[in-house]
Length: 286
Image 1 (cartoon, rainbow, N blue to C red):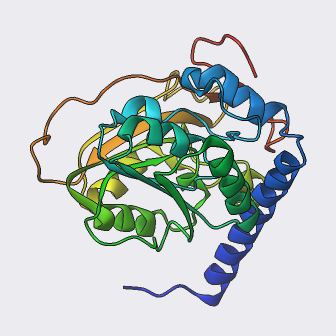
Image 2: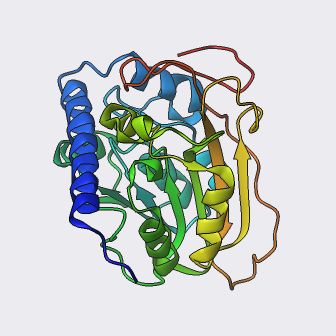
């Protein structure tokens, strides 16, 4: 295996620092009771089951992974990049008191906000752990379902993320996430733009590359549903996607995936504060 060069390592560190700073700033804004239009809009328009959640339980995602995960009572769920905890709390309602939900995040301000929200919600079957999604603080083969909402694109080492996801899933375990995929390759300048990285754009994978990397990690039954026309290169390079895959084994192999949830389509320039979103039918921009 080829080791990373010093330049690559520096670039990876720069991206991770930019992402941590961007989301740390959002967490502090929310803690100060100023969640912003983007975060409030995502929750109100794409999370019909989030009624009654405190205002500080926000989302900066690109979809609703809980809507496609088909969670069952007693399951163990991991949320990669759990942020303020919305997907964790909704998952906790579905897996019930015999289930367990673990949120993983690398940003201290987000973890602090999530803990505050956990106390507000009273979610006793949820815990949050500090960690990076390329090296998860989770035991081997201990998880039934992995969810994530617009986070994997932020990683500079997707192969490590997929290997870790495969490692922690039990045989037959499900990987069901919302993420961003590319309609076309992005330029070197776009890849180097840290604002585009932290805005969930420049780090995204092409549709076929996403599938190939999941398959190389060992996953099967891969399904990637993309908002709009995947091959429409006249518009934005980025599209939101609902992505499902399984670790081989178990009784569910080859079973069709639950279809549900709304897509969020990126329409505006980079930046979490200005990134507008619409559902796939083009209605109700948030």
